[in-house]
Length: 288
Image 1 (cartoon, rainbow, N blue to C red):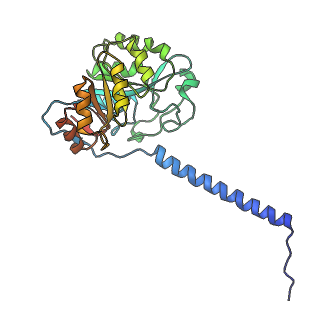
Image 2: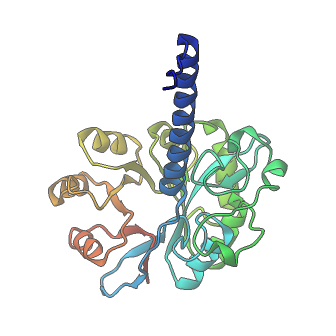
Image 3: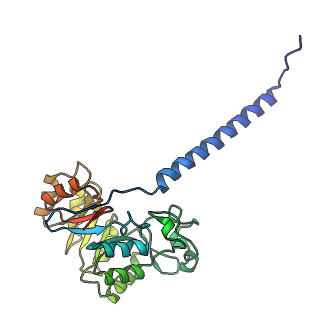
């Protein structure tokens, strides 16, 4: 009978370390795969045409993002061709002062190279290719859209520009946004939105346009903050959440706040909100 091979404590420790290393590599790989699927996967939408005859202002969420990659020039053109009343976009300012359209502060989800938008120049950003989004195969070599390009498209198709002011940076440069809006003769149509109340205060100093405070759930603090913006001000809320009841919306309306809802992709939700008097509707999939 052969003798059992004895392992030293050091050898056992080495094997344990190797197994742990393999485990963590596999765990990271699985985690990244799950992250990419959840974070980067393009959602599929069932596009429906509105059947309600009541007045409603339909805003294409990041452009017609069910048809073309979100926040790109083709998505805004598709919104115009489909007859949307307006198109919503998200803006950041590059390191060298160019306002561009992108939802995330980082390019990872939508582009072939990864950088924080505010940390690189526009010339650098122009070398990045959008490689994610609806029907991306139809849009080879697609580059980032600038705010100026977006406004030009809104002007061509007579759409309301709905500009989300992202992050809490660059408020001292909002005069550049206002100047571009005025350049395209859209000052009487533009709407500004943000989750950051400080951004909205800064924009109110420069513009008398309608300004909406973004709130997932409407509460008394949100109502107070929205009212404090002054002028034509309101709340743009998540219209799918049960917490946003008819009663709280009526309270807002009674206090003179404008009301908008996002992101409404089902006709039942649309009809419920119209019944409650909410007519500014941001959508991915409900077309005029």
